[in-house]
Structures are given as C-alpha cells and as structure tokens.
Length: 397
Image 1 (cartoon, rainbow, N blue to C red):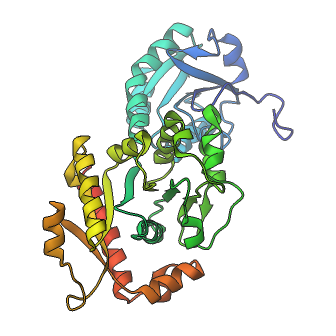
Image 2 (cartoon, helix red, strand yellow):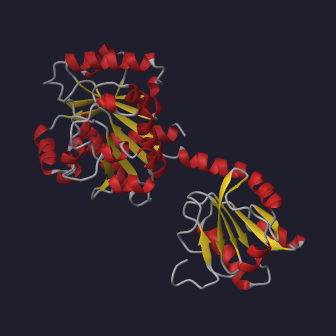
Image 3 (cartoon, one colour):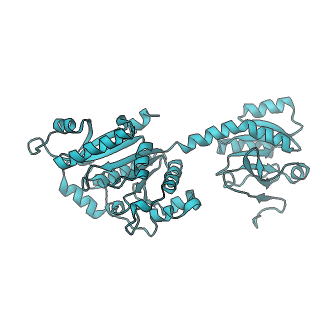
C-alpha cells in the first residue's frame, strides 16, 4: 500500500501479465475466490472503492481485469468507461451485485466481455475466465508476432552490410516517429560488430547483458540495454569484447529476439559472417532477408553459395532480396547487373551507388548519410530499400 492511498485501498500483486480482480472491501470479504491460479491464469487482487480510480500503471501488463461495477453509482460507471477507453484491447469482465437483464445488455453493448454476479464465487470466476481465454490467447498471440524481422547478411566481409543495416534501420525509425512505430537494430556480429561506431555511440551495456540474463531477461532489461539514436532507432550493441560465436545459447538468443518482436514494430538483425545454427534459424524466422553483395567475382561466388545454403534449409527465396552495393556507372564497372544476376541465379532487388567519400565521411562522423547529403544518389538508394522492405512486409501480412 502506498503512503498516499486511503487505508481501505490496497494491491496484492502476484505477478506480471495476470488477471486483476478489482473489488471493494465489502465484496472481497464476501467473495469466495482463491488468489493465485484460476483457470490457468495468475490472479492479482486489488481492493479499491467501487468508484475509486484505477492506478494508471496497474493494468499496463494485464491479460484481463474483473472489476466491480455499481450501476447506481456514477463514479463507478465513469471508472468502467475510462478503463474501456484507456485499454481498448484489454478483456474486461464486469462484476455486478444482482445484475438485471437491462444492465447486462448495456454493459455488453459498451464493449465489456462478460458480466458475472457478486458476491464473487470461485466457480463463476473460473467459468468466466475459461470463456474469455480464447480472446486473451488470440490477443497475446497477435502481440507476440506483431514485430517483423529483417535480417542483413553478407556475401563476404567488408561489403557494407553493417552500413546498410545502420543506415536503413535509422531511416525507417525516423519515418516511423510520427506514427509511433518503433524500430530496433541488433548488432549480432559478436566478434566484429561496428554498429555503435557507425552511429557515433558508446554504451556500458551490450548484447552480452541480455545473453547472460537467462530467464531474467524482460522488457525492462531489453529497454535498458538499447541505445536510442537521434533518428529514434533503438540499438542493441554488439559485445564490447570478442564473444565466441559457439558460446551463444541458441534458446537464449531466440528468447531475446522474440521479446524484441513484442516490444518493437520492426527488428533488424545485423548477422555475423560465419553461419551458426542460431543465425540460420533467425534468418528462417525473418520476413525479409537482405543479402549484400558487390559486383566482384569473389563476392558473387560466395553469395551464390549463401543462396544455395538457404535454399537447402527450405528458406523461401522470395524472402531473400539481393542488394548490390557500391555499384559504379556502367562505363567503369567490369561486371554488369545482368551478368551478376545470371551468376547468382537470383534477381538483384536493390542497388546502392558507389560514393566512397560521402559514405566514409558519414561513418567517420557517426551520422546518417541522409543528414550529410539527403539528395545524394546513395541516400535515395537507402530510402528505396526501406520503402521496398515495407512493401514486402505489408504484402506478407
């Protein structure tokens, strides 16, 4: 109980993402409800007067709420309306003393999932939560898969994959600011990650803190590790020290990435050059895979091998978008796009112009190329990639 709360109000919190029972002192005394597990849900009990406002942070992670409603009390009805307005997706069950049919109809019409009688009984609560379970499961399953994954892989080292990941993810984050969409970039190149350097950042916390957290990893820890850039991008830095790739617990990295897809609208993964079971699995989970190549024989040869590996793992080729970096004007390049596509046996979806002085200046300063010269061909190419990825993601939904 907080010091500024009335003596008659208290909260018994038994875990996050649970179902909250909000009842007055008299109804708690009359209720026959075990606090703990009910119908497979964790239950938290809160004692508040029938017209008392519900604390704003109480239901932030709730799966559902059972709230006392007194139809003859204006404050109680206002509280119910406020809950429905503030938490439009939250399943709400109204608990009413001797509810009349007209009251039940009015509550259901107002968007309440169910109405149960007071005094509350374990049997009726169990039945109500069981009936509501399908909606709750559907809601949270939708939330769990809401975030989209974009993986960035490279044909060989030094082709500009991290430049692409940092620049494109930052542009998407900047575009999403107005609509409230959030973008996160994971630098998963555990041994040679350079995303923080390219974005002019430093941080005492890195991916290592998430990998070592085990079951303790949660949204708060994830948010504490991320760095937010001026563009609005949330970045999870690579480990400060060289981290053995084979030392990564695959289940832990899946847990971290799954958490990120629940917290952010789009998650970009800058993957290491060496394949591991976990990196291959993350590519398989991604809705878009950007394979960065150069128009050179070594790069194209390795890219062809990468494509062959992905096909052998039944990864849908339509998800793989080849990006040709540092493309020269036709007069100066020895390998053309048509020749490269024939060598790869796969179309080239995007190209990035070769402008070494501009790109190098941006990376040295830790700023976006778009901020140095927004009308450059390189900036336009990155924006085209971001727009193209969005179209692919929307088309796959």
